[in-house]
Structure formats: C-alpha cells, structure tokens
Amino acid sequence: MQKVKLGWYGPEVSEICFGSLAISPLQGKVSAREGTDLLQYAFERGITWVDTAEIYDNYARLAPALGRFPEVRVVSKSYAVSGQEMRLSIEKARKALQRDTLDVFLLHEQESAHTLRGHAGAWQELQEAKSKGLVSWIGISTHAVAGVRAGALQPGLDIIHPLLNHLGLGIIDGNLAEMLAALAFAAELGLGIYAMKVLGGGHLALETEKALAFVHKIEAVQAMALGMSSRDEIDFNLAVLAGREVDQELRTRVKQQERKLHVADWCQGCGRCLPACPQGALHLGQKVVVDQEACLLCGYCGRACPHFCLKII
Ligand code: SF4
Ligand code: SF4
Image 1 (cartoon, rainbow, N blue to C red):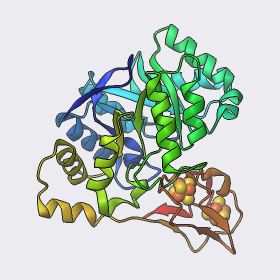
Image 2 (image 1 turned 135 degrees about the vertical axis):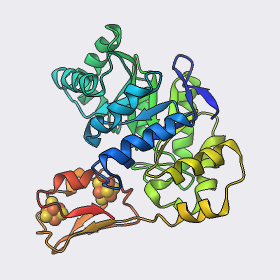
Image 3 (image 1 turned 30 degrees about the vertical axis):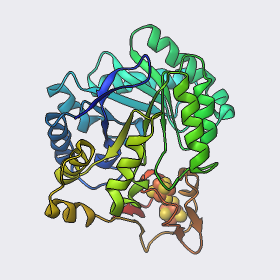
C-alpha cells in the first residue's frame, strides 16, 4: 500500500484509512468480533490507520486490533462544544482505545467559520491536549465548502477531513468545483487532507474504480477513508489503488452489496430523528420518509430514534 504524508507536518500513513463507521453498531453490518477481525485483516495488508468517532460507538471493537498493531494510527472526533466536553471526549477515547496519545483528534462536522466560533472552547481544549502530548495532530471533519475554508484559516489546525466524491454528492453548501477550490486553498497552506464519502455513502458503489481514481488524482488530497465491512471490500480497494487487475468474481461480489436506509412500519412520525441527519435527508409524512438520493447511509439518525425504527439494510 502506497504511503503518503498528511500535509507538511502530519504523519506518514497509507493512502487508505480504514473508515470504521462501516463496522460500528450504527450501521449494524457486522458483529463486534467480525469488526475487530476485519480491522486486523486490513492492518495485515498494509493499512496503517483507522478513522473513528465518538458517535460511532465502536471504540471497544477497535481496541483489540489496535492493541495487536501498536504502530497503527488512530483518528477520532467529537461534537464537543465546550472545553469540558472536549476534555471528556479525549479522555473517553484514550481510555477506551487504550492509547496514551491519540494520533489525530477532530471536531466533528464543522460547517463554517460560524460553527467553529461556536466550538471555540472545544478547540482551545484540543490545542491544550496537543501541547500536553495527549493528541498529536488536530483538525476538523466537514461536509461543507465553507467548513474547509474556515478550517484552513483556523489557527493551530493540522488536518481537514472533507466530504469529496466525483459527483459532489453530499456537499451541503456548494458544488464539486467549489469544494475542489477550497481544498486546493487548504493544501497550499500545508494542511493534511483525507477525504470521506468517496463512494457517496454507497451511491457510487457501482463505479468504485472511477470514484477511487478521481480522489487519488486530486493533488490537494493525500489520502481517503474508505468504509469497509468485508474482506472482499478491503481486497478490492487495495487492488484498485495499487493499480492491480481485479478478479472478476471479487468485483461481482463487492458490487452486489447494495444497501439503503429502511424505516420500520412502527415509526410514529414524531420527528425526533430529523435533526440528527446532517444531509437533510429525512422528512415527515405519516411516518418519516427518507430521500434515498440524499441519504449517505451514515446511520446517525438510527441513534436518535427511541423506537429503533431506522436501520441500514
Ligand atoms: S437519513 Fe441522514 S442521518 Fe440517516 S443514514 Fe441517511 S444521511 Fe445518515
Ligand atoms: S423514525 Fe423514530 S424518531 Fe424518526 S419519526 Fe419515526 S419514530 Fe420518530
């Protein structure tokens, strides 16, 4: 697996980061044991880092694999607003992941300079954690063009984790050209950049090679987090990015894994899940209605439903 450097000052990592939302209880595709085994399989094949988040609720699945591969780097993120919340988030991650130092910690889903200002206390705490050696690099994740531009100008920021795919699916405030321009601006400042939603949350699964090749060629973006919930997906992605011929049977198996968000019949139409969706993909009828085109299959909404109505199947 090709190694890349995340920006001027970031770590050297494999071009693929294991996106662990795919092995979290939120997506429910694999058991805890299967998730840990998949991570180990990926690390044995040269993937050197894993991306998680407090909301993914999967630290316990990561910890055994990280224990066996202490050189593997880990990224986590939190929605913390205040300094106290961020302190708790960092402590929770250090304890649950059994790491004295977290390699990268991000503020989750920052939309703009305004959002970042609202998280000033959490940002200051992140900077202090870095100065104490509890975290090595800090940054933000974002689905927004304005988030990338604000992150690029944020004092002390090392890494941006933006949404990026060749159709611009999921960008909440602009188009693909605007996102690429913002990323080029951030890269010129030396920031580390690794993309998410390269497959548009599953919508581009039938054109995986094209989707990976697109991000691979963007000069401003050094790496990409890919959600993988089977050995086939790991093998497939590694082969594509290494430029190796992909076995036809493997290709067929990977492309058959189409998924969608399902709303259970017993949904009461209470609307509590709507604010949990960063894409605005949920609407209220008699029960909740999913805009499958806009849905990125992140699974965040499932946690907000007290009746367990939302599942990715
Ligand atoms: S509806 Fe929204 S929160 Fe739920 S899975 Fe889709 S994108 Fe994620
Ligand atoms: S899915 Fe759950 S939270 Fe959303 S409207 Fe239905 S019952 Fe309410």
